[in-house]
Length: 158
Image (tube, rainbow, N blue to C red; front, side, top):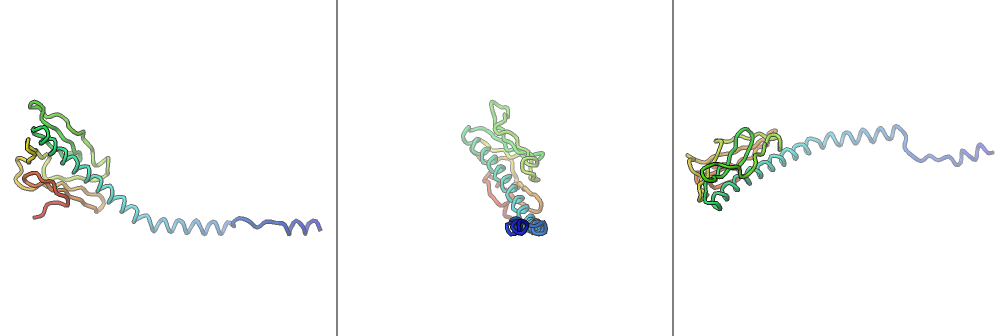
């Protein structure tokens, strides 16, 4: 009788190994299906962030030239962006260089290495609009700087 009593009180709580393996397989399949979309969204966001930083540096260069009444230069070379301003005839750092390839894992191409803004915030020495393009895994964002120095999102319109 004692053996029968212990069998009646036996607990079947918990999961079997087959049930746990089934759930694990389902979780892996769901994650595998979601990964490409998450990766694509992440890539788009990093390109957008790099574009915002580049636009901020361009805007800073233009605003600093107006504020100080001096020549300010936006530089975009070697996958880096930075701003320098004139200080008694010498260009000094105004915004530190940021490496876009290491900070955001994007590739930058620019139609020229620098854009010079005079003391009135007008770009000088440009023969036409200049484009800065940022890209990563098929996602591309562009910034256009007009011949006069206006900063436009989305690239230059022909």
